[in-house]
Image 1 (spheres, rainbow, N blue to C red):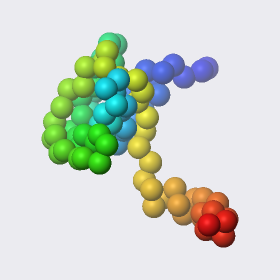
Image 2: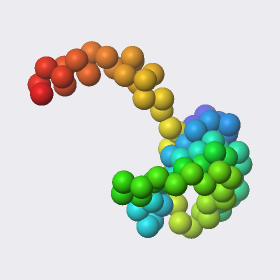
Image 3: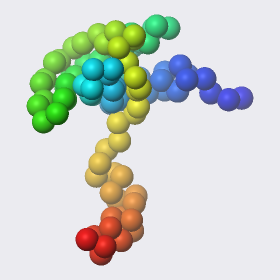
Length: 93
Protein backbone atom coordinates (compact mmCIF):
# COMPACT_ATOMS: atom_id res chain seq x y z
CA UNK A 1 0.00 0.00 0.00
CA UNK A 2 1.33 3.42 -0.93
CA UNK A 3 1.76 5.95 1.87
CA UNK A 4 -0.26 9.14 1.56
CA UNK A 5 1.45 12.51 2.15
CA UNK A 6 -0.27 12.97 5.52
CA UNK A 7 0.85 9.47 6.56
CA UNK A 8 4.44 10.46 5.83
CA UNK A 9 4.02 13.65 7.84
CA UNK A 10 2.45 11.67 10.69
CA UNK A 11 5.60 9.53 10.89
CA UNK A 12 7.63 12.73 11.35
CA UNK A 13 5.86 13.63 14.62
CA UNK A 14 8.30 14.30 17.47
CA UNK A 15 11.09 14.76 14.89
CA UNK A 16 12.64 17.92 13.48
CA UNK A 17 11.15 19.24 10.26
CA UNK A 18 11.97 22.07 7.90
CA UNK A 19 9.11 24.20 6.57
CA UNK A 20 9.56 26.54 3.59
CA UNK A 21 7.07 29.41 3.47
CA UNK A 22 5.75 31.46 0.55
CA UNK A 23 7.50 34.60 1.83
CA UNK A 24 10.94 32.96 1.56
CA UNK A 25 11.22 32.19 5.26
CA UNK A 26 12.30 28.79 6.55
CA UNK A 27 11.07 27.50 9.90
CA UNK A 28 12.54 24.45 11.63
CA UNK A 29 11.32 22.77 14.78
CA UNK A 30 9.98 19.61 16.37
CA UNK A 31 6.69 18.56 14.77
CA UNK A 32 4.04 18.12 17.45
CA UNK A 33 0.78 18.07 15.47
CA UNK A 34 -0.91 19.04 12.20
CA UNK A 35 -4.39 19.05 10.72
CA UNK A 36 -5.93 18.44 7.31
CA UNK A 37 -5.34 22.08 6.35
CA UNK A 38 -1.63 21.54 7.04
CA UNK A 39 -1.63 23.94 9.97
CA UNK A 40 1.47 22.76 11.83
CA UNK A 41 2.40 23.03 15.50
CA UNK A 42 6.16 23.15 16.17
CA UNK A 43 8.13 23.28 19.41
CA UNK A 44 11.63 24.77 19.70
CA UNK A 45 11.04 26.52 16.40
CA UNK A 46 13.66 28.68 14.69
CA UNK A 47 12.90 31.07 11.83
CA UNK A 48 15.56 31.73 9.19
CA UNK A 49 15.46 34.28 6.40
CA UNK A 50 18.51 35.54 4.55
CA UNK A 51 21.26 35.58 7.19
CA UNK A 52 19.05 36.18 10.23
CA UNK A 53 17.83 33.61 12.73
CA UNK A 54 15.10 34.12 15.33
CA UNK A 55 14.21 31.62 18.06
CA UNK A 56 10.42 31.37 18.17
CA UNK A 57 9.75 28.58 20.68
CA UNK A 58 6.23 27.15 20.23
CA UNK A 59 4.51 28.19 17.01
CA UNK A 60 1.54 27.35 14.86
CA UNK A 61 2.36 27.73 11.15
CA UNK A 62 -0.72 28.39 9.04
CA UNK A 63 -1.09 25.77 6.32
CA UNK A 64 -1.86 28.14 3.45
CA UNK A 65 1.55 29.84 3.91
CA UNK A 66 3.50 26.59 3.45
CA UNK A 67 5.29 25.59 0.24
CA UNK A 68 6.86 22.38 1.54
CA UNK A 69 7.55 20.36 4.68
CA UNK A 70 10.54 18.05 4.92
CA UNK A 71 12.07 15.97 7.69
CA UNK A 72 15.28 17.64 8.85
CA UNK A 73 18.39 15.53 8.56
CA UNK A 74 21.18 15.48 11.06
CA UNK A 75 24.08 16.90 9.08
CA UNK A 76 26.72 14.85 10.92
CA UNK A 77 24.75 11.65 10.24
CA UNK A 78 24.44 12.53 6.54
CA UNK A 79 28.18 13.23 6.28
CA UNK A 80 29.02 9.85 7.88
CA UNK A 81 26.67 8.04 5.49
CA UNK A 82 28.00 9.91 2.45
CA UNK A 83 31.63 10.36 3.44
CA UNK A 84 32.83 9.03 0.08
CA UNK A 85 30.94 11.84 -1.69
CA UNK A 86 32.35 14.43 0.70
CA UNK A 87 35.88 13.19 -0.04
CA UNK A 88 35.29 13.37 -3.80
CA UNK A 89 34.01 16.95 -3.50
CA UNK A 90 37.03 17.91 -1.40
CA UNK A 91 39.36 16.55 -4.08
CA UNK A 92 37.60 18.59 -6.76
CA UNK A 93 37.92 21.86 -4.86
